[in-house]
Image (cartoon, rainbow, N blue to C red; front, side, top):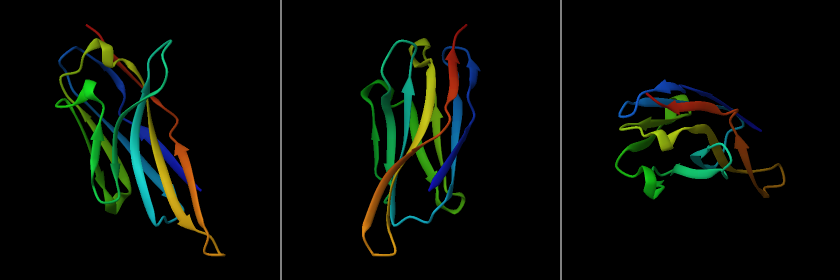
Length: 124
């Protein structure tokens, strides 16, 4: 239905910055919420930030004031700007898309798609 391709991970020193990108392609949607999740080794996947169709955002307490999620509608791309990175931010970051469209019978269909994940390592 929708394919997500991530880019931008890597190794950065504490206090540094990275920007992740997530480009979507495929079906045209009526509405969607885009998000970034992360999963550290041995831990559960957690929501980092999300942004809906109207541009409303939501952040985990641990990243408020340091991370910014944004979307570029023309490119169907979402970004996660990560500043003041800490070692505890080290994880695999996954982008997500919760989408809604109407099928041929005009029935609503909701679904979630995931990106392939990108590694972010914060270390000196």
